[in-house]
Image (cartoon, rainbow, N blue to C red; front, side):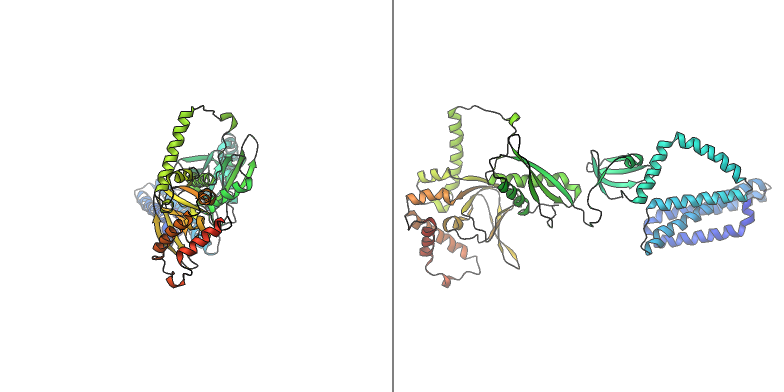
Length: 505
């Protein structure tokens, strides 16, 4: 056909150009996210229109066959661009209005099928025998399928993965030793970006044949991932106490990325090998921060175990026996006692004690470390011990049903909880670790021996407590001096003697 097939459809080609141009302008307005693709399609449409003009010029110069070929190529291009623009409008603008959001590969498959149909129609109009073409192409297809079966397997795998949505862009997945977020699901491969900012390319055919894990429940809009943190604890510690300590270490701390609506749980997993192996399980809200959050949870749990005197078990095969002479041990012990006596010397409550009594008291102090964010003591709790802050800072909060007010910040040398140890009354405020805090803890039993040996010291201590309480009352709006009956010193002395049973003695 010298004039080319496009000469048969000049009007149809013009209409197709007008429709494609209108669709392109509409998509530029409706789909800002696809403006780059739409602009490229409009540029290609302009080139096709330019090719039509070139074909007419070539035809006018006396080369109708060459002009017809150029016009045919332009008409084919216009048809392809029109199909592409219709597909984008249908799948990305029209179907979402009706609540239908098919996978992107569905759009690609439909577009490819329409391209093939348009090509076959054009060949048919050009007079090509499609029967012979199909027979020839079948042989070629069989050869290609045999030689490219692995590539085709990956392509078909990508089709199936996107159609059944077993893995989707944005999913957090674990595939063997690879863990990360799915950034792309393409025809041939799936790309996973790890936390190390490495992109791992996994063939879709492999995903179709093997098992992989998608993090989070499909039916839950919020991403929740239960993490397991392991501890080996000395079997001498009671399992119920260890479990409660591990769970409270997370419950009583504000740890970033830990889901607060799902409580942690601790379980005893194994009791053989000379140690008790526990798993502390908590819910992580952001998989991106898995290792840092595990580290914080582990730090809070280890500090809680240390505060409660529960030692981490050392595997039998790794236990070291170090022989030290008596002089070295005595020097180490003397150094620790000196540090404790220095801490006690700065506490107003122990000013009436003799040096020998403070030395005896130093032996009864217990190390009590806290991790930043941990609750050291809670308002209203009953605890018969006090804390001496050695390092770090702690915040004192007054809590009510409607508000939580910061009262003060405690630093090294501060003491709190003395009224609980001396009278047994509940805590008057909540104290939380502003930074990592090192404390010494002294309980009622540690002080009882000294108090029973010298009951008269209770009177002096009651005076100091009364003075301390009077100072604190200046900052408490709710306190009323006229409500204090009997007088402060006598009331506190009576409570101390009753709490320690001095009257009965």
